[in-house]
Image 1 (cartoon, rainbow, N blue to C red):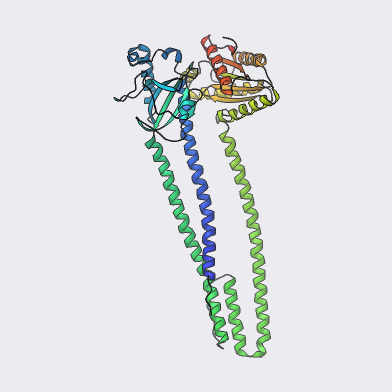
Image 2 (cartoon, helix red, strand yellow; image 1 turned 180 degrees about the vertical axis):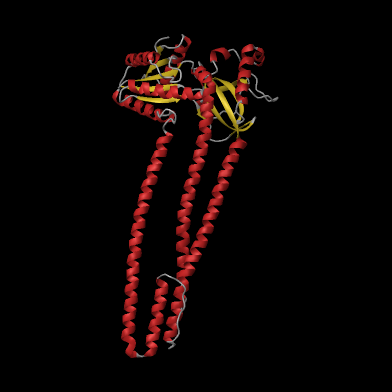
Length: 478
């Protein structure tokens, strides 16, 4: 008799092994990539936000004169170098802080916080230029991969500084060994998970296939015994499933055949009863599987709800419940497309709480957080349904006004400024203390980009701050 190319045991083993490996491997791969992407986005977000915050503390007008090594003797260089080294010392993850200037396609150091002999002097060229660095002169950006330069291997974040006009940025470097250590640990965890999945699939498949094959082999031996005329032998199979029932049926059949042909009918009836019992059991198992299937569908639906909630959380500021910077940027980009199609104007407002740091220093961050939440509710109560408000960063809010020109935006800004100045209870623990805000207003122009529109609003906000705060200034107002 020709031996079959693949036995049932091998088929059962391979089918179970591949099924378990596919499920566990897919889940493990999904969570590995999710964790890797989340870690990378978290690191990039910290770098980008930190660089953006530090860039607000530097004025390009003051450091414009720092162009040559001898300018390191100037007081403004010493003052900013000391300030930046103090900022670097507040976070052990920061390797270097520096300010760079762009002249055409060339980039030069202005200030470098390096304390070693490799410290870059004012005017020293920077040769290893990457796309993220050049983008940082216009808007906050961060490296997508680890960058290597004469000072080492780093992941860096960049942000344009105040009054830089696309020519100055502040950069922040995080040492690559810390970043790579985290990525390496994640890869090791993924490899361990994969090995465990392989081992689990092997053990699970081997146990199941052996269980099924043991009963089948006993039945094969018993059939051969009946064919050889050995009717009195009985099989012993320790199990509570259908295979055990089938073995018992074979034992009964053998006993009936041994007694006489007269009992053949009763043996057939017994076999029929055994088959009916097996069918009932199969129907019961089928019903159980249907119930389990419905439960799995419910679990899948619940997981989809959780996944949607996570997506919403990634687009929402946890403190105020407003859209975060990433989410509002998507709406801004859509508004530009709508403008190009319908020529409907839209205006951007940048509002900033005046002297907010003093509130935190005096009354604590809890009071500052409560003030931000109360101010959020006030702004939401004054804007239209189609208007959008987002927390742009820190105590700064961005308000998008679709179908609104510059004058309409200014009217709403003046109304908001007045409402805030006259409102009581924005600081519940200090009801007598009232907040004020400064607002910059900019209308999107066809000849400009979205970044320039936001920058114009930011410049107008800066002028409002410079002119005494609690003011509204438009981009057209020099």
